[in-house]
Image 1 (tube, rainbow, N blue to C red):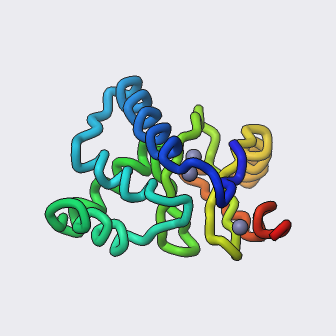
Image 2 (tube, protein in one colour):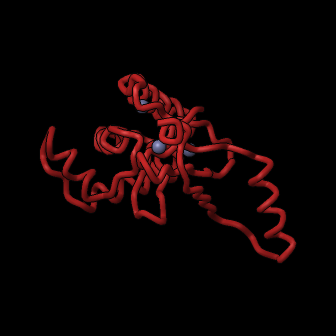
Length: 156
Ligand SMILES: [Zn+2]
Ligand SMILES: [Zn+2]
Ligand SMILES: [Zn+2]
């Protein structure tokens, strides 16, 4: 995966995210309902993190306005399937089309264009989890956020 370039074909990204979600749900037996898929498509509208309020606005722009609770529940479902990640520092969400296989997400957040990408490094994650175990700590959930400037913004 590469950091999204400002000139890329985002239509392909959206299609990729939806087909990835279908595959993941088919494998895990989870149900990708129409509403959950709609929420995912709205999150995936761009590579910038989006808050729950803006997701509701996006849904209302092309259909009936959803109740906030249904959007929150759909986001919880999508997070549990690793189809969406929450950026804790911004209380916002990004869609994911990576195969995690148990590796936690490390999110790359550009401070200039606000686009978000991610890196999957099983060894780095395992190193942190092992270090936590040494302290007798069992990791249940981990979110790594790396904030900085992407290559596109740096060269601009
Ligand atoms: Zn894209
Ligand atoms: Zn991911
Ligand atoms: Zn950038």
